[in-house]
Structure formats: C-alpha cells, structure tokens
Image (cartoon, rainbow, N blue to C red):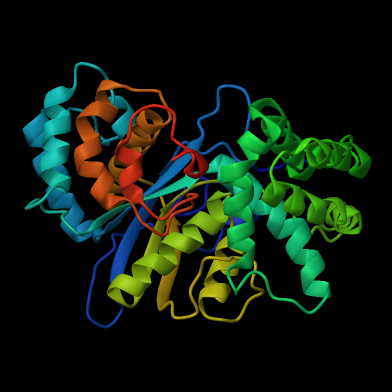
Amino acid sequence: MNTLPRQPNVGTGLFGEQYSRRNRPQPTRDDDRTGRWIALDESGWDGDQLHGGNRSRYMTIGSVAISDEDAADLIDNLRKTTRIQASELRFSTSFARDGQTQRRKALTALLGPGGPLEQRASVYILDKHYFIVGKLIDLFVEEQTHKQGLDIRNTGIARKMARDLFTEGPRALGPALFDRLLTATVAFTSQKNRDQKVSVDDFYDVIEEAWARSSRRNVTRLLGLLRTTREEGREFLDDAFGPDASLAGALEPLIPAVAAVTGNWSLQVGRVNILTDDQRTLTDQQLDNIDQEARGLGHPEFRYVSRDVRLGELLRGKSSDHPSLQLADLVAGAGFAVAKRHDGHSTPAGEDLYPVIVPLIDPAGMLSHDEPNKVAQAGVPVREDQT
C-alpha cells in the first residue's frame, strides 16, 4: 500500500498531528478588543539536557510587544540601516559576529532609550543549573509535603529551599560533588532515562553522599529532607516513564518559561496574545496546558503563571512569515550573548550589547536572585553566599 508523505501543517514548519491546531500563518494585528500581541523566541535551549559538556548554563527568551503589522516597518528600516541582504533577520548570522559592530549599534538604537522598542522588549533569563535545583525540591520534597497537607510551593518555602541549596551547596559540598548532584538529577529525571538505567538507588546514593559530606547546616538539613523522598523518587519514575507519563518532560525548561513570560507580560499590559516560534517542544497539548493554566482551569504544574493572567490567543508561527518573531529572535540572541558574558564567555556581541540588554532583563526570571543588574558583571557569576 502506498503511503502519502505527511505535509507540513499550515503556518508552521512542523509535521504531525501534535502541531495541527495552534498555528498562525496570517500576520498579527493589535486592536483594543483582542489585546496586544507578544512575539517570543528562545536562544540557548538544550531540551532537558541542562548540565555537562559544552552546554551553555543559560537559556533566554526574547519577547517583543509588537504586531507583525508594526514589526514589518522596523525590520525594513533595520535592514536598510545595516544593509543586510538576507530574507530573514537572525541574530546568530547578522549581528553576533566579530565584524558586525555597526549592526549591533543599530540594534542598540532599536532597543535602547528613545528607540522604537523602548519598554516593548524583554529578556527572560533561565539559569539551567538553578532550574535543576528547583526541580529537586519541586519533584521530590514538594510532592512529599503535599501528601502531608503542607503547601510549600505557594507560600514561598520551596523557592527559599531551592535558593539556599543552590547558593550554599557548592561551598558545603565542594564544587565537584555539587556538580555530581546536578548531573545525577538530570540523569535520573530527563527523558534519556526512559529505560531507567539510572535507578532510584543510583540517584539516592549521590544524595546520601552529599548529605554525609555537607559542611553547612542549612544544606545538610535540605539534603536530609531529600534523603526521605525515595518513595517520591519511585513514584516519579512511574509518572515520568510509565503508561500514563503524566510527568513526561519534567525537566524541560521551555514550557514553564513560555508560561512565565506570558504571565509577566499580561501583568504589565493586560490582555495578551502570544505568538511563539515553531519550536518542536511546544506541541498543541503543551500549549493547551499553558492556556488552561492561565485561565485557572488546569493542574498547577506551571509554577510561575499568575492567576491574574488575561490570555487571548496562544499560537505558533514561522519566523519567515512573521517579522515580529524576527525581532524576538534578535532580542533572544542578544540576551543570550550577554548571559554568556556573565558566565565567563565574553564575545564582542556580549560586550557591545550588555548596557542595553541588562535593563531589559525580567526581574521575575528563573535566576537565584532578584537583581538583574548582577548580569552586567562579566566572568563567572558570584554566588550569593560569597558576596
């Protein structure tokens, strides 16, 4: 029997039934009734492989409060100013290289004070290592306390636990053992462990060693709590890799990050419509989950979405069809260059752009502190317990 090849879904470059509904091929346009359009794109995404190798420590989401109708004029003007001939503007090819200083000056003028995107662009930075520590608390300690009738998530206790373990952990355990703890968490909880080669015992052996070697009371106490969550560890394997797989993708940062950016923009400007780049992780079901949570209908999986979110559309599109997504790519790429500079990987792009990017950093991002100005520091970031 002949099988016809699958065709790409309208409005996206993605194939298959998982990407059949939430697509937007036509240009976006703001009006008073439907609300503002916000375009989102990411840079530095590695899926749920958040630690080890040459992976960047940070992921950024660039977002711009602009419709395609208005973005088209800005893209045309930027193209004329910079003499870029490419049909689609991308930060990595047109603004990131050593000899593109003049182009970065044009981008600075676009984003900086008095520019057309002043107060209309935002950079959400996610520290992947802090995200891993947060998931340690979220997936195991929080699950245990929830069974006991305690709410550590909405009271801020879980967040404080994560910050304490992250900031004090390297000194309490030594950098090598702290890194092993992060590596073990990723190995146990990521989708690569579908075959469960990393067992509950393997994972908790590392936690036991960390607890035994901890030299700081606060960290020892937190690791002591983690030691008692083996039952939750076994339940996690069932929930993440069993027949129902309700926790599949638990370590995927892009989904809660998109939810967070959606909520943060809505708190600023009211009703919003979100257009994301066509990223494979953002299936129809994942966008459904974010949408339902924003409307107060879903399970509280997305921790950072406010109940006051006013969300209209939540759709995906191709950047070649949407100039607003091209602007979001430029913001995300610039933010990623600045985040790399903060992590000790300086480039001409990071040096040129950090003065204009740092003021755009969302203070509600996934960082272990509430001070975006710290990202202006070059080199390996100073942990809070060392300041």
